[in-house]
Length: 161
Image (cartoon, rainbow, N blue to C red; front, side, top):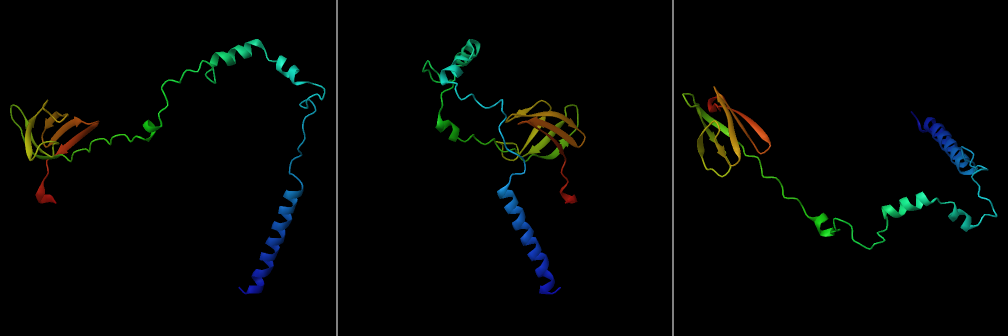
């Protein structure tokens, strides 16, 4: 394409855009006029409009007490510093891993990564460590619940990495 073939469409688009802008600025798209019924009477005074408020409306407005006429503070009291406080972050979820399972009369599981415990610990069904409860121990799987989470751990096999 040459420059001359691009000039005409560009010039045409600019002229049309200018015409549309002038049309929008000069005349609105929809007629704007007040309804004859909505126009206030010229002889009406301010006192007439105040007298038109019903007593039920005035009672409802005063009963809601929008500006606290009694001069009592709102409950709870406004405290801008409380809005700026940061909530404490939730404690991090532990990275639990199942080292092994001993199946017998009372099944046991060897678990690593328990919060507050270094190394591994042997746990049975119902044991609680740092708010983590062992729910189930079966072949190759242990279910632990706590901290709004349920872990389904499987025995790790380092030779398969």
